Image (cartoon, rainbow, N blue to C red; front, side):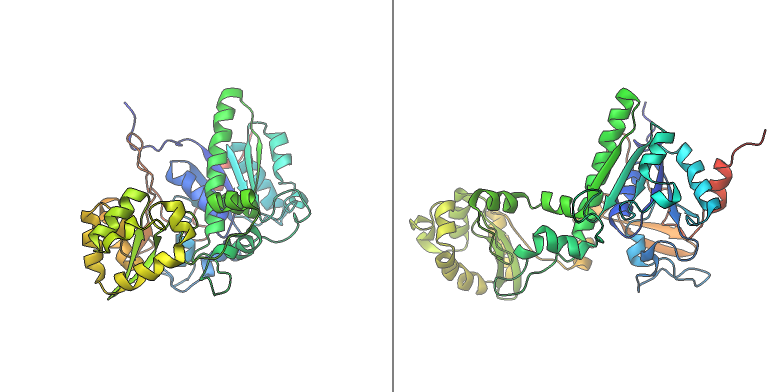
Amino acid sequence: MTDASKGPLEGLLVLDLTRILAGPTATQMLGDLGATIWKIESPAHGDDTRSWGPPYAETQDGVQDLSAYFLAANRNKMSVAVDLASPEGQARIRQLAARADIMVENFKPGGLVKYGLDPETLRKAHPGLITCSISGFGQTGPNRDKPGYDLMAQGYGGIMSLTGAPDGPPMKVGVGIADVMCGMYAATGILAALHHRTRTGEGQGIDLALVDTQMAWLINEGTNTLMSGKPPERRGNAHPNIVPYDVFDASDGHVIVAVGNDAQFARFCDALELGPLHEDPRFVTNPARITHRDALMLHLRPALAAIPAATIIDRLESAKVPVGPINDINQALATDQARAREAVIEQKQDGAILRLLGNPLKFSNTPVRYTRPPPRLGEHTKAVLAETEPEND
């Protein structure tokens, strides 16, 4: 029988030379799945996000190195403080790399060459090693040497051009979504490379860019533009290809209505007593509703604005029309659904109770495990380096 106490990646070692969000998101995912993560940090200040507060966890020694931002992407990791600029530190990293299955780094392209720790050098010494290099624009191309930050990736990659109110400025997404999605692609690529290594014994390098991944998840708006040649309009919360699919004012708040097909639109009109609106030739089909979007909204917005949000939700749910509230984060994480799905977990670190976001993956045989809280800076240095110290003859 499967040992449910072990994750599916149990036994794999990851040398984590990343900081901020994209790389740490990827390595946290691998750690949640059971891999051992050695997070290499500068002894002086550690991961930059340790100081990106407030808020901070209240630790017993009063040192503020556990910001909420750092906590978001660094559980299930061991912090190893090593100075990469020193020959001793470089030797330590080579010792760790000799034991590792995977190395993830997000230095500027070529930034590790001066230390002799670049992916190509490490893979040459250890042919089974899988390396993943994350940067703003990738290891090739005319922009390879430009810095990479989430906001810059969102701007360069197009998502900001279609986010925001129609009459407002371009708008970034409310969280570092370019970083997070890059981390998800990194985790997927690493798992694919692991499968290849299982079949062939070969490690390989993965080159991943924030901008590349951000362009890849433009999804339908990307293909809409490629097919039409026209850049999309900013529509706020509206959908470019489905109508009505938007946020509406209610008499006491807001609701989301997401009508996905023509049958739902007919039930929507009946449930909200909109009369024969769904029989109007301008609105019978979704393509027609897209063409006559503005005319339809002249009917819908005042009608919904006269009805309480709870009434709209009750009526449309009864009619099996997709509808929902707009929760703030506290409301969302306090819902019965969030509790049932373990959207929030708790871990203890140095006297502090850390409330963290849970991993959404639900495995039938090897569930996600939360074995280590986000570490203090250098918490595991002695243990990890002692474990990898070469034996004396």
